[in-house]
Length: 96
Length: 96
Image 1 (tube, each protein chain N blue to C red):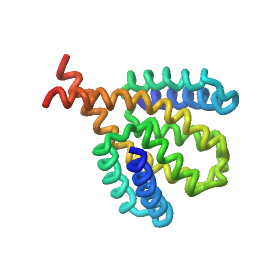
Image 2: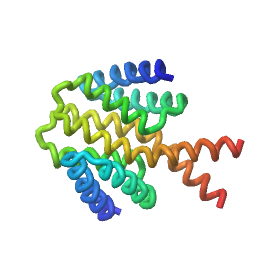
Image 3: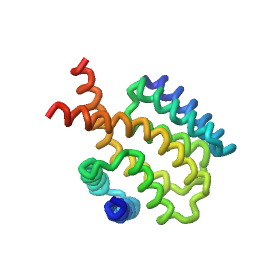
Image 4: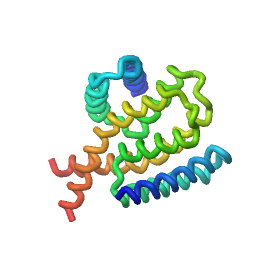
């Protein structure tokens, strides 16, 4: 699982770098596809926010600490959605 | 709805400011409670990411554009979770 997260982080870093560099619709399309991969790997929204933060820190090492710290709060709020999402998965499995 | 989003943005701004200033567990607890309010108002995860970005821009006007732009991608990925979340709500409503 740790390996998967690292691979996803590298993949997302590549998508984000390309997007910030070229700003094309293509980048948004890649993000949509990436979102499907995350859902397939059952990565929770808060885990993804954590990946986004890690990639941001790598790409922009001079970003103020407070901006990076703000992700702690984003993450915490996302946990609420994560719970709803896991409930969704178990509901769907039960309906199969 | 627009009014609600503005109110939520103000509430979140207050929570984030306090959290970044004092860095206490209390801030994380407030974020958990805020998450419940968002779910009650049926705010999608991508709408919340958008609120977070707006608040960051207000609090840190000097943050590099690329960092702010990166939220476009975060938002796009969150839409995948948003879809799953809305599907969850409709499944749950059907089971009632």
